[in-house]
Picture 1 (cartoon, rainbow, N blue to C red):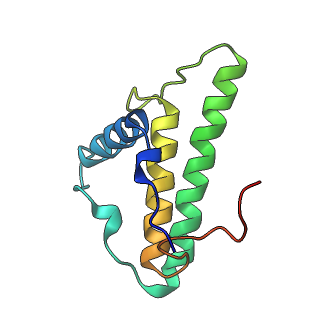
Picture 2: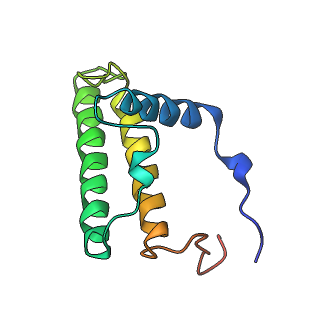
Length: 114
């Protein structure tokens, strides 16, 4: 098993995710990394579903805006691109699912790429 090539993840993605997470940190009643706190086992799937639903809402908002010629598609609350929030929520979904043993920590492809 080889190590994943983390150089495949580029700076703009890191910037977008970091900005969206930092915005969430500033919301009253929230704190940095609170999405990492464990929940009851029964809530793991519910939390994953909630994160994935948020990803879909932000991606749909970005697609709808793109159809209107608005490539930036900014979130009304944060002023950040919807894609920043979608990427951050996808990170939350994956990390939470791995922590809850719903997904493997390092997925391996089942076959070689053509």
